[in-house]
Image (cartoon, rainbow, N blue to C red; front, top):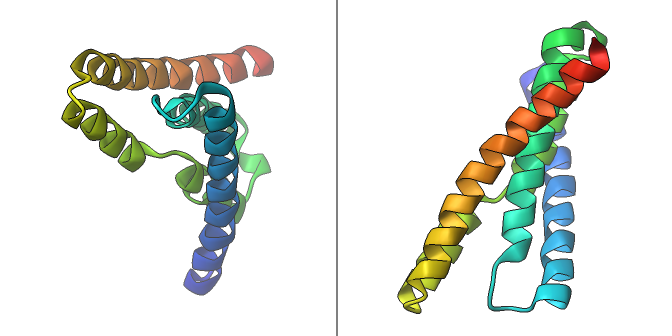
Length: 130
């Protein structure tokens, strides 16, 4: 794949991922409210799980995908969808509001549950493919 096409694939995938992230954030805002960044938490966990699933799929069935498809899905879609920069900002804002307990629960939960999501995603693909 040439470099220009690679950038285009990431651009399109990133736009789709970012639009999906925006939808999750708006939906969470509607149901949870503005005081807790539930949308970011949901996106980070599900995005990490999806990355685990893709990583496992590529490891065990990678020959069925092209480099462009892998780039589109991982760097593009999931890169646009996951929001650890927003996670850092949300944590800092809670801390600044002196909601230290919520900030610590949010930061710890995001990291631990995202790692567990990645492991669960990889495990699920291994089970499906075995």
